[in-house]
Length: 455
Ligand SMILES: Cc1ncc(COP(=O)(O)O)c(C=O)c1O
Image 1 (tube, rainbow, N blue to C red):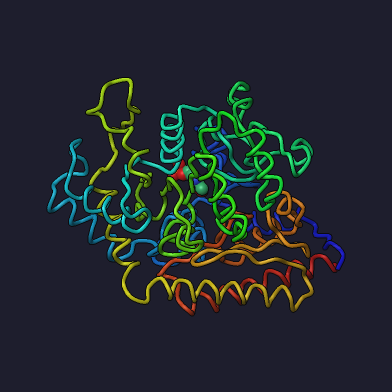
Image 2: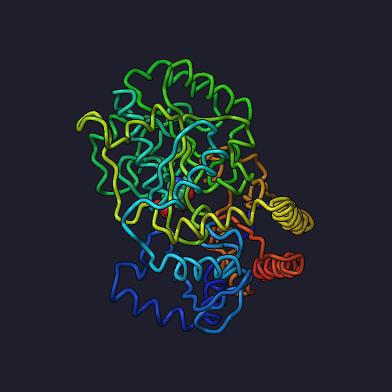
């Protein structure tokens, strides 16, 4: 099938007439902060939607439009918006502890830390942070201290947070990336020190021959390999690739870091680690483990995390700190969320509903002859509009992103919320009715684009 020619301007005009209140607030917001957003990821063209209220699987914008929400705050909410468990535990923290933060250790940190360690790295150790990016930053610092080496290797297209040490080759212009089997590091942000890039290596995801060659030939001085075991949270590392990588990094004595900020408690209860039956040297967690509050964690080998011990001699340890690390609100709400998700049948229900929606989307696209690839496991999925298999960043970039953007804007106009081009994250609040309604809205949105293409 030939690429569909959609008049994007018409799609944007429909979107604008549906969301005048957001357009107005966007103009105001731009006066306060560059681009009108507090995080780059929240921006999209022509403007982001300003939300006002949420409940369960639904959110309402400032114009009063209701949406079935599949952003779920970039996957952070696995119980849905304002779940009873979340409300109760927020109230209970205030009632029983009397504060949101002590600035001292608490018993809750030990309980929650113990259970995360049992799930992700039995026999290991852990440390809480306030965000995913603090977790990846800490894991890399630990790897450097532990190995006494400086170079970082990451995969092209993998995101590890807005921190200069890891902000390269996440979303590079493909024309500048070099040959697929030997990608060059490209800074993603104007502040990234060019010197850092010369101490950085980029690996091609799911290309074992090239990855092995780069790691064995240029691995001198390498402190760690960090990766999203599912690129964009949904494109899996192929099993043989993952097993080979675990083996080679072990042979080379290079710590392997799984960044499971997206995939933790989402692709499986035990994350990508459980899916692959692979235990990396360190795992970074975030999003879901805070139950909707800010948090992050590094879980991993005790001898690597031992560098954090402040009682060891100054200068031989890794200094890590944070006023809000382990704050009781994030700890207790996070712990209550994981307890809820752990109840018998809960994760399976999330997985079944997600699989159902994923197959409905595929059926809608297939019935209309639109080439596509579905990707994702557990409680999260995405689709790429291309006839070719999608195994890495360059495959994503060669899919029909313009059509996808139009479809996502049309879906918002029709009451399904997702940040355009992002992945679909479900929660335990999403019901079978939500799935059926979304299927209808998806079919309607695709049909209205097809009608535009034909007119
Ligand atoms: C894989 C991955 N790592 C790290 C981060 C950074 O997490 P945070 O936004 O909590 O700093 C993200 C955020 O989306 C992520 O997806």
